[in-house]
Image (cartoon, rainbow, N blue to C red; front, top):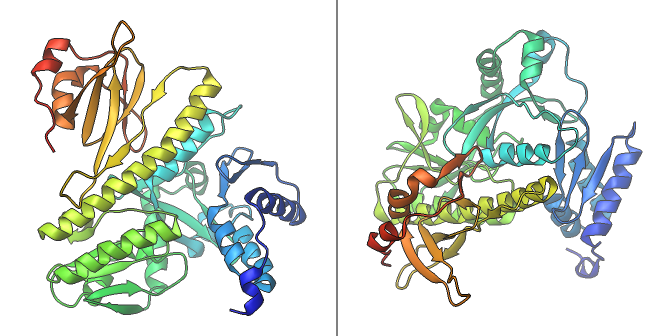
Length: 405
């Protein structure tokens, strides 16, 4: 890095967004879009909902030397120049690829669509990988990549499963054995083609790369594939630590889960070593709180647009004394219509009728569920929330054992 690179000017976030909007306008026919400063993103209007989150582009643009910045920006803009999809499956099949995405992405788009007028259709075709991640189909060209919706599959006359089988064949053909050893038995894939995380779906690759034992894999972000052996605790600990760092540094989260192979199927699994399990649980709790925070922002804006007075409870984190783990907590207050996240601890709050101090009792989630489960209406969202309009019976709350750290 040159001396003057340390002093290169950084555009403000709003200035960068204005630059991106100008570039979009110069790249061909005008596309209706608008900038949302609070979320630092650009929304493309129309039937196919498309969102350009600016965080990663802004970070990479500012980090690049001045002469390279236009190239960095053009690389990001190429991903939003989505051409028309082929009219037939035969034309499309060679360009189909499987992708794995966080469930939070789909929920994010759905909540966004609910506050648009008219509401655009959000109808990606997908298959569940586990509780945290989905398998989707992408149409990939040299210029761009776009996900495939149900309407397109119907037009092509194929099912999701048929198209996925073709996409998997394409992925295998593009997957040479390309790994780098990071030490302690940890391996990382080095394909760098936007489908690193998709290689999780190739069990034969996992076994070929794993030196003894069963393969364990994490795909924390879209461009990362981490692998360790079930026989190597040091490698597993290193994998969780690196996954944590990558999710903090890179964004574009996919999943904080650890995956293995069971009877030829990719499944989320629980580490057998206590230290690895504790480290993984800590990471998963923190990532879930992150997703709840993003979700709360969308729900608050949706409720404001609909004129609904619903409290979207925050998923808070704290570290108990003499513990390296973290615990999640949310509040359930009597008399408050609430969207409650699923957390380790629920603070049951009873306001004083005379305006004095409230009384709070801390319950473990299963205890709150035992006395108030019939009051919890599960909401279709990810991560899951529960609509609670009422409050448990005072006698049941008094009898419930308080949480003890």
